[in-house]
Amino acid sequence: MKAEIAHRFPTKIPQKKLPHAYYWQRSDRLIVAYASQKKKAVDIAPMLTWVTIDLHTDSVQEQEIPFILDDALSPIHIKTLQLACGETENVWLLGTLEFQAATSRYHLVLRAIHRDRYRQNEAFHILFDDPANDMAAIGPLLTLEAEHGMCRMMYLKPEQDYIATTAVALAEIPLAGGQINYTVLDFAESVLLCKGKDITFMLSCAPEVLTGEMLEKMQREYDYSTYEWLYSLSGGGDYTEAARWLHYLERGISVEKRAVPVDDLISGSLVVSAAAIAGPKRPENGMPTFVASMIMMNAQQKPDERYRITVKTNIAEQVDRLLCIDAEGNVVQTYQGSVGLYPMLCQARNHIVGVDLVGDQWRLWTWRPLEQAMFDQLTLLDKEVQRACVIADDEPEQEDVCWLIEEYADRVSISKRSVATLEQVTPPAILLNVHLLLPQSGYGRLDWHTEVDALVHHGMMLLLAVDNDDQLVLLRVKEKQV
Image (cartoon, rainbow, N blue to C red; front, top):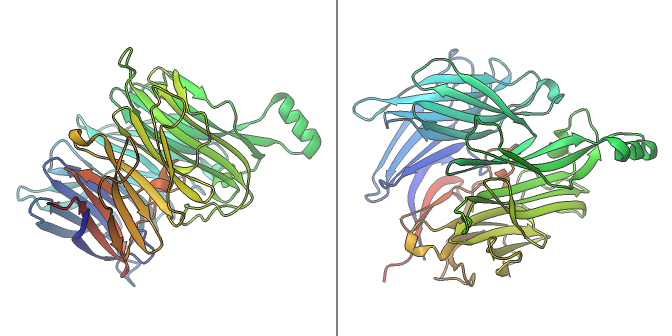
């Protein structure tokens, strides 16, 4: 494998965390957008750097444009970005979660970037601006999609002072202007959304107040009531439809009831993470499936909130599940074993390839959920691996391989693995003096711990990373030509 720097971005990222978004097309073009604040200029709106890279010719077009506010003297701090393309390439949609000094609140904002006939970026036009309720932080942005003249944004919005459970909100915004439709789809503190063909799957984690005999017993013994945190799975044909089915895991984790239940996830001992992907179709009827891996832990001490990679203390209680569920809510298969933290999944034919962290060591495994309850292959990765990710190959003739990214303290290793054996297909590319970017979108997304800025396109991997000089770089990894 060969790795090379495709582009160096003119920005420094001292903490390896910069709000960014990317978009690519099969026309061999990658667009990366990121926000940066000029040093010692906190009273100036941040700049958006817009970079278009032709992956065949390596030609680069780069432009900086300022975020436009109603009050030009009111600074904003951009937390996260998402990027989508409108009906034509003349309009790009930028969703941001940002803190605005003018209101002292977080806002979820949708901006349209219009391009003139010379394909240059023009000023922003704000289509949607939803401020947080008082004393509550909004976010994160779960989805940003545009089709048929409509943009859909799904996000989490807590009520004032977190007294009520956080709403899973959907805003449908006409790109041509007009009435915005706002819907509350569910209530949960952390959510993962997975969209398949003609079906939408949602995995939610929320506290339920214990009732009945169990609550009475706890109140007698401990003189306080409790929340029971539970995972639920639901599916529907569209975002706007009511869930066709709802499935609860039969067991959760009980914690002391607090005035602010979300504190259990932010500063308490509760650790949750999950992953979900579209799975193989059922052979008997062609029905689509989803595969979801989820884990919930009650730890003695909160893991490092900054990196969210290792658990440093003993676990008092754990609930986990890896299952395959079809579009009608029928559980097709449940893995007969325990799964780990920070799972990441991809599909190769009828195999699911996954990584997770069990104890202090990462595992790589394969599973055929339509055929058996146990893993086909399982291997432990090097104990020095700090973070692992798997990504499916995008070439049809290469569906029996996947890509594995392993981050160490001093390097990143990228290899192709055989799905049948998990062995390396080619020698790995070793990237020295670079590090993966930290997760961007925040605790409200169940899969945020495993966010990695990488994609596979025409048999090569493109990876956003940070070098030892804290500079943002785009790396290209591909097989060496013989």
